[in-house]
Figure 1: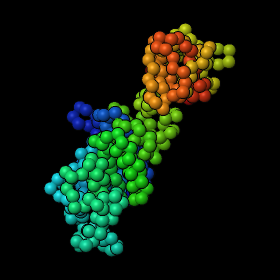
Figure 2 (figure 1 turned 60 degrees about the horizontal axis):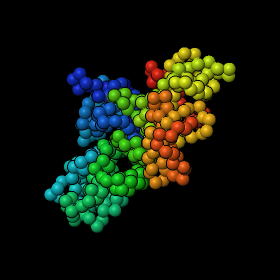
Figure 3 (figure 1 turned 45 degrees about the horizontal axis):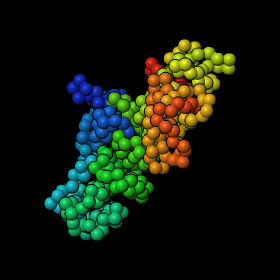
Figure 4 (figure 1 turned 135 degrees about the horizontal axis):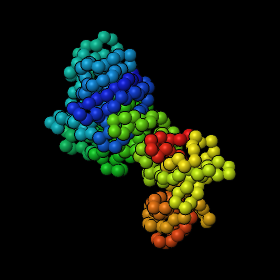
Length: 367
């Protein structure tokens, strides 16, 4: 088993920088998710671990080994692609067996690496199939399988040779919503059972929040924040992370710092909003205040005057879209709350303990 370490890694394609000075340590046996929008560089980072791309600058280690320039087949990693990449003319058994035919391997009962016998290969295929519930499909071809079953075949093919590292590039994006939920659970269970390192790429924050031990958020080729999912959600490092993590995303509005008797307030249009004590801010500084939809409540006499522009009824909850000083804010409420009329005026009050303050110019978190 092995972790991965990026040290000052950059990757350029001509004038385009896909990954910019990435420093990241992926701990042995963790489930790390590289999360970010399309084109942010997360798949390029994954491909550099696999050896499908070479870094322009910097060093990549897998375990104790520097793998710059090492052939992909010699890195002892397995990669699962978005497209599954199954052989359509082969049975499920043959698809899973394929990696065992190409190189010497350690036999199931131990000993030096060598070409495996047919019986040894069959035993390893059936073990991998059992882990993913594919025992009844080994004689079928991919065309006879559902999308979820094909994904499990791709996973079984990756685990059959017991690599030290699993790499997954948006493997669930071709599945419908119900199958994605089911397969997320299966992947986490697979990670627990095989006890090795998973590096998983996605743009879907739900996948990241529900599967990862840690999330590494990437934008424009640069690492924005890395940490446990709930920490990233509760204390975003900058405005990008605040807006990208969360559904609905964090409400943000620009403000100016004004002095008050017991500290500072944020002036938002004509409204004054008390700021947490102890922040390193100064009078007249331009800031951006953030608050999650669940931390914004309708309260008579609250400091923020707004007009209801829309109401989204979602069954288990409802979202109010309220315009405040030119900003459209989302308020998350329980489904049994009274539904206001569109066009009604109301007052909002953010939870003071859950206000987030960012420097408008740099976007970085303050405090």
